[in-house]
Amino acid sequence: MTRGQSKKGADKTKSRLPQTPKKDIVEDGQDVEFSQEFADQDDLKAQQREKEADQRAAQRNQQQ
Image (tube, rainbow, N blue to C red; front, side):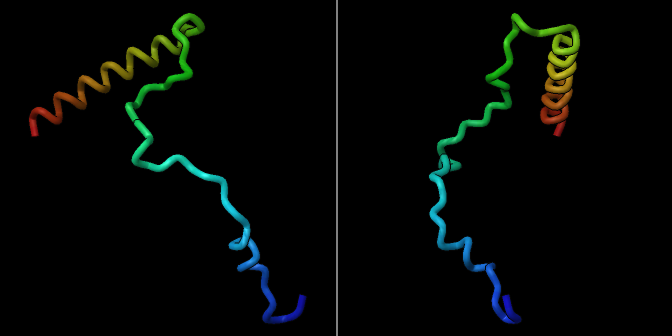
């Protein structure tokens, strides 16, 4: 390749795979791949910390 020739524009001609539109994505903060039956002690502690953090955040929002 000589000076002045670049491949920067070569990737633009490839077609892209369709993506899910952002308006159709629902983010509820829940991990849908989590299974309670396979949860270990660390998972249960993390769930408890998450609930406590959510409660603290809700209290802060109410105070503002």
